[in-house]
Image (cartoon, rainbow over all chains, first blue to last red; front, side, top):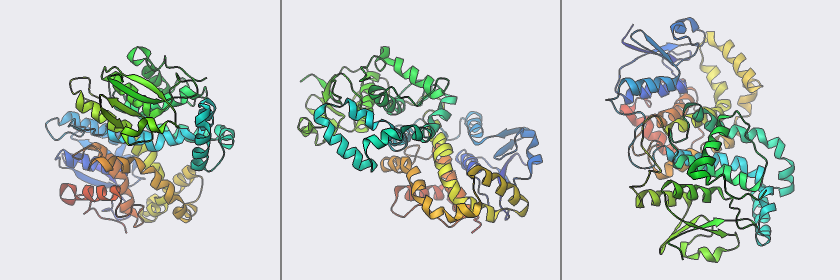
Length: 231
Length: 231
């Protein structure tokens, strides 16, 4: 066997490699400047992967070490080849935190908004209510009352929007890593928004996102936990 | 006026602050250890924000500098107070890249999959086709033919899943920042997957995501651009 082999999902034409996860590994290897033999693999060839304990690719073999799972492979490459270009670099700027902010803006907040706009309306100053109702009913194309009535049916979709958080928090205590930073605040803002206006909560105890939210509420001597709520 | 004032969205009870974006700034200020007067603001009080050129909060006033937009404020704080704890830190581990990977796994790839599974089936080795059809039809609860027929109707939802990319790439050339890294590969894998199996493309020229994909295709002497396609 070559020094380094990647089992790489192929179609009928063995030259066509189409797995998004194998491509992650392929490019991570190129980034590290590492040679690899990419071996075409089909779904039915489970036996070939047996030493990895997995039935799916990507599987990377380095000497007699078998590695499965694209992220586990990336972590391994980063650790095993620290002198090569970093896969998880720490250069200036916002870096990957920019996408965390964008996720909060475009996935999380829009998923939560329809569940809470009626609660927001209820706690607004009288002078703000007409503006808020008109602008939000135009945005959602329906009445605040209809949104409130549809809430239970939207919980599942909202929980689905939390999946990136749940996956991340399986691996690390904060979205920014070992300690909280702006990525955490950008996302946590959504939970302060809903907490201020409502007792309706889409998180359940035992969820890693729930535990993270508890840690966030405790930061800065409970700054967020102590914040007044309308309910 | 106090040295630093945050105009902070309030409900009828001025103590209740519920804007997710104002909370981002509030916590970013706490992270930096900076004092602030948080001034309750209602939607109708647009005149109060006039010097910022904005009609929405958060607006932060430091001396005679008026700043709007939560992310712009965070960038300003990071730049103005570099000796305080970093909002966009560069410590070890995967950091925020972990959530980029999770976004690709749980938002982007699932949004693209139903558009492309019929194309994938068509290019598979004969030995893989029965397994693939059975497992994917079970996953999506419908036939591959029905998924193919519904493709045009699903494009808008898939484009919506790209919003975090579009927002990020407005500000920086790669998802990891100035240079590509694993966050880019994790997301780009999705586009290699669809490119290998289909000519159907949900990206349009002029889209920042399209331009980023072009840059990714060119990396490593065109490693990805040269990859064989089934179509």
